[in-house]
Amino acid sequence: MDIHHFIKAVLAQDESAIRSYFHEDAYVNWHCSNERFTVDEYIVANCEYPGDWDGELERLEVLDELYIAAIRVYPKDKSAFFHVVSFIRTRQGKIISMDEYWADDGTAPQWRQDKHIGTAIRTEL
Image (cartoon, rainbow, N blue to C red; front, side, top):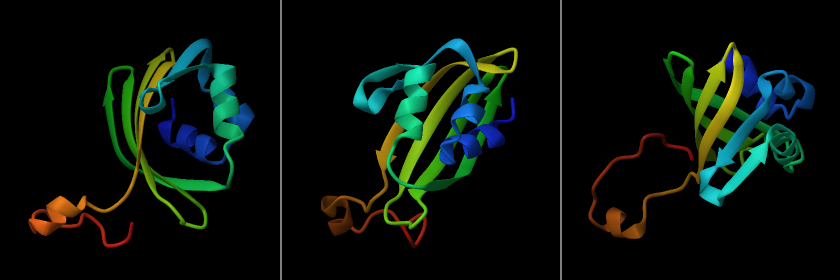
């Protein structure tokens, strides 16, 4: 499976390309919102999500048929930034399950800023 092309298809909201990566009985869990999707439901949730999206793969680990990807996701106008960590389990080159954890990017909470601990990983959010 070409994880880079899969991520590009998801960001482009390309329904047919996305579908080609999944076994028909696969499922996707979005743990932060307590949702499980079939492949069809995942495609609706992803492809009908408002806006035009872009992103970049920041880290990829591969363990046999498990891909662990950390991806920075943002609308093309860069008005917001998010991170997703995806655990993508495959069989014979097709996704059988995907567990994702989404978070909004932002600044450290004020109580940590007040303690003057930590430094910024990047200058722009």
